Amino acid sequence: MKNGLIGLLAVAAYTSQARAISLYSITDLGTPQGSESVAYDINNNGDRHRMDHAPDGTFQAVLWQPGQRVTNLGIASPYTSSLALKINNAGTILGWSGSSDPNSPSQPFIWKAETGLQNVGDTTLTLSSINDSGRAVGSVYLNSAGHANAVTYDPINGIQPISVPGNDVINAVKINNNNQILILTQNAAGMAGAIYQPNGSLAPVTGPTQNELHLSDMNDWGVVVGSMSSYRMAKSHAFSWDSVNGMRDLTPGDAIQSYAVAINNHSDVIGWEYRTDEMHEFPILCDGGQVYDMNSLLILQARDGVDYTSMESMIWGK
Image 1 (cartoon, one colour):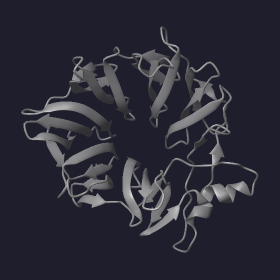
Image 2: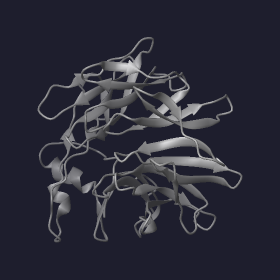
Image 3: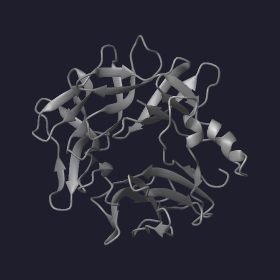
Image 4: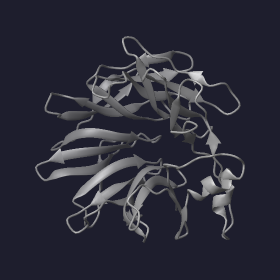
């Protein structure tokens, strides 16, 4: 990775003419803590966190804020590395502590400016999302066979299981600021996705043809994104889903498969696609039915003396 990796950047408003792509910019977040860096998340304040690789193979979570010095989030004993995954709008960061060996045990942590980095639970716990009130969700592995149960976590109530009669709730993917939880359930009929409402009811995430869903994210309006596949659909297709419009296939016409990774409250979706002529990840911008190659940014920035070779991100504008 040259020049570290690069965070994703503010989006300016643009007209319906061609266009939008020139109003995006790339910000190099640098690698002051090591030889490489990867940016994972950004909140509404423009705060980004990233992982810096050190020359000895370890890595460390850091926080990048506009106009401020990079904050080293630290590493909690007995671990040698830390990785930040999510940041909420209050500046609370969710991540995990571990080592440079991907097969070694890891443990979730929560970082706040006032308390620093604190490990949560033990190595059986995985936390995947945190909302602005500091409530987190994830799963606890129950045995060596990989069986898991979805849980919530907050500092007052600790770790609490999510229970749905007649179903095993095996993972909680996302919690939004309305305390809706995107979950994966399993019963005799197989696995299914659903939104677990604050009152305990379920809103199933369903589509007309899929036999398998991969759930990635949900915004505060309850719009879900991920990828779907079926026996008639040999490749995965990115989708968005909401309770009014149901399932919407987001795959552009020139793609053989696509994946949606995250969605914000403006219904912009990030992910990637594979095209028919090139079997590698392609970042795109899709707006009003038009698809733009986000790598065009690299060409625009090159004239300013920036040398980037690829951008591993994609945005759909809805």
